Image (cartoon, rainbow, N blue to C red):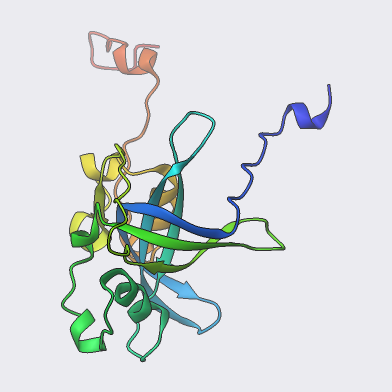
Length: 201
């Protein structure tokens, strides 16, 4: 046996080019600390299906784009929504946008490959040109917000593992983590008490 037999093969990156995509997930994942700027900022993640690129199971390949809300003209945050809506947004205009409204939106994404990590990056997002058929996907659409939905319940449990992992690193989660039930062994939980109410062993 060789070590490669124990290692899960890495998924090769998609070739660098522009793809037709569908927004299938929008996640507000709380406040995260920036080592670069030494402060906390809210983070949004947009998840894209690329229907024409399939994985080994025949499902659409997926990429995501992280966003930090910003106000400066030309910043990535304003450029992202401007590209989706084909308009120039001011900070005041973009503040009225509901990110959940973009679920199911077909668009174009310009994808690059990081030479060092060999991972894809969504460099830009653009509206579809007139006359281009919108791509389709069967992937369920998901909106989740740390602020609105918290860290418990059916919606939280239904999130992809990687999204929950990111949310658990947020300042909100660290300050107020949900209570977790202690997992009791089935034998101990089912064991009857003694007649005098004492320990059964």
